[in-house]
Length: 161
Image 1 (cartoon, helix red, strand yellow):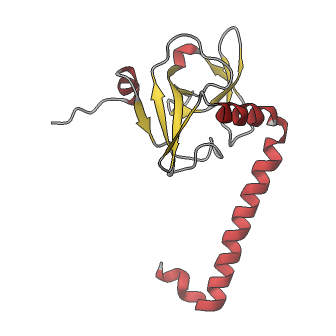
Image 2 (cartoon, helix red, strand yellow):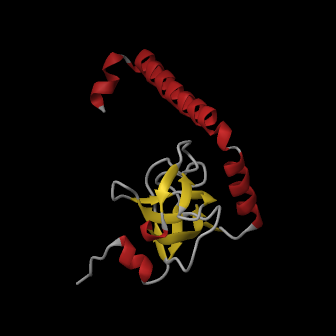
Image 3 (spheres, one colour):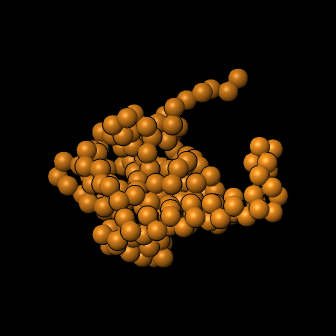
């Protein structure tokens, strides 16, 4: 019989790999494609670390630390522009040590990764227009595809899906 345990308990046992859902850590972590290696937390985290924590809605979340404060952390997902201020060490139970992009492992200790993290945090003031532009382009592309399909296959193609 397979024992069912919580993510928190799995992380406490050692290395744990998850495939996060959502777009809050895009472009680093792609929804449904990339996996992250989580380890238990040992001590205080630092700027650019990516904790696994419980948010105020009791959800497991993976977002980046953009500032360390005396009482906790200021955190924001790479694909977001709104900061979270109420995260403390008691909320955090794991930390990302790297991620898998296709078959390649990328360590959070690598120079290339740290350059990415510093750049992405450094352009925090540009995130909102970047994110809104990317989302607009994706919606536009989907709409153009839908119109093209209607023209080439007729109006009823959507009903057959």
